[in-house]
Structures are given as C-alpha cells and as structure tokens.
Length: 390
Image (tube, rainbow, N blue to C red; front, top):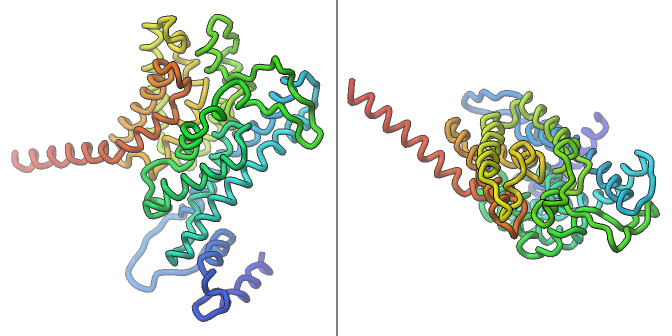
C-alpha cells in the first residue's frame, strides 16, 4: 500500500491546476479517496466527527449485500440446471450464476460511474461514493434475462434523471436503483415479467444446455396470480430462497443476514425496517381475512406475503435509504408502515402487477418530505402551546 500511496503522490501534480491532466482532477480525487482516507483537516473552527463517513457507510451496505449476491449466484445456477434437467455440483451451479451476473454488474458500474465521473468533471465537483451501493443493487433487482443494453439504458436514465438532475449524491428524491427497475418495467414490460424473465435457460461458457420448450420459470407470485389452484411453493422454500425471482430477492435468510449487519453497525434505521414488516403483516392479515378468488394473492397467509417477491429486500435495503426516506424518528414509523401496507395492497388487488414493493417505496419516497414536515409542525405546535400555557 505504501508503494501505491507513493505512486499517487508522484502523479498528483499532473492532476492539479496547471498540470497536464488538470481536467481530470475529479477522477484522480475519486480514485484517491476510494483507496485511502483523506488526511485533509479543517483550518478554522471546531469540527467533531465520528469515524463513520460516507465511504464507510457505503462499504458497510455493500458488505451487507454480499450474502444476497453470493446466494443469487448459486440460485441462478440451481434454477438453470433444474430447468435443463441436468445434475450439477455446488461449484458448477455457483460458477454458472457468477458468469450470468458478472456482465450485469459490469454494465451497471461502467454506465453509472461513467456518468457520475463525467458529471463531476463538468461541474468541477468531487466524485461521491453513492453509486457503490446503487451499482450492486441494480443487478440484484433486475431479472436475469434482461438484455444488457436495456440495463445500460435504464441505468443511464436513472442516474441522470433521478440523481444528477437533482444535484447528485444525497440530493435525489427517489431511490435510483428502483427508478432503474421502474424504467425497465414500464418501457420494456415483456422483459420484466413472464415465465422466462427470471430463470436463465441458455448455456454459459459451456455450462448446461437449453431448457425444453415446456419449461415454466414463473415466480411464486406469478403462479399465485395465474394458477393458484396448482400453487405448490411453500413458505419454507421462499425463506431459503431456492425459487425463481430477481437475483437478490429470493432468499429471506440472506436478506436477514444483511439486515443484521446494517442494524448492528447502525447504518440502517430499525424503525423503518420494523415498520415495513409490521405494515406488511397488518395488510396481509386484513387481505387474508377477507380473501376472495377474484384476488388470488389475498389467499396467501401474512407470513408468506413477507417471504415471497421483493418485499423483504425492499424493507431492508430500499426503504432504509437515508436519502430518500423520512428523517424524523416518528416520521420513520409512518413512512415504513405505509410502505408495507401499500406493497401488499398493490400486490393483492392489482391483477396486472403481482409485485408491489417497488411502487410502494417510490410512492413513499415522494411523501417522505411531507411526513417529516407534518411531524415537525406537530412538534412546533405542541411546544408553542406549552409556552403559552406557561
């Protein structure tokens, strides 16, 4: 590391004002702060900081996502070899999933970081670390059979119109990864749903063959919506995660491990996380109590509602985004609870859209400032009444 530090110090003058590469100063600063903690200190005033800066926060979230990433790679291989009817070892399944996900991860980071680097250069700003998390979230929530060019277009749209146009990292109103998925869903709906969207059935570098024409790779929620009488996926299967679905959303175990990491490190708000699950359970119980064959998803028990689809992933990694969520403590309870309620409400009573977590989070992203405003105003009014009484 000392040699790398010396190399960066040696080339630094080239990127400073007056150097040959001064126009790429933001690029150099981004690489330097990514590799090393900046040693710059304040020259005036008193500043008290803890050890948890943005870089550490982003890296912690990435670490929390690793169980989902690793399990996704294995499950992609497991679903593939089951579809083609071939036996395979654990490592064959894992390596197949790795080869399937790697191009999506590369496209996500190259497009997203490329736009952020260009934006930083144009506006002469520092490159922030916000896309470190977004770049790994996108491959986890996009169906594996989505063409790479579609993923690139959606990522570019989300970074430009949901982030950069608002001022960059920390200024965006909506979750960038979910905007990517929403763009894909509404622009290319045929690639975001159906039996063939979530299970990769073609060979990867010689691993496995092709699935037969009769193969069905429908997700559990897709089966519920179209053929509830023959629905056979158990809640235990969904809890483990060996089911079709978006790569990072299938395993409740992997998601809960990530949740534990976020809560222990204090990166995510437990108020939001618990409230989302509470709202989902409440709405799931109501829907189940008044279930009807007209809305097959209402027949699922409340616990199954939490395990199927992207509900748990959204509760742990999307709703807890501190930038797009509620900031006040009381507001976080309302914010999370309403996400859980709307996620199940959309899932159950919208026959054309078997999943509601994405739209629920984006909807409450829009209302998060209003929730905080109401909480603050109530607090102000209460204090004014107390002051008048005295």
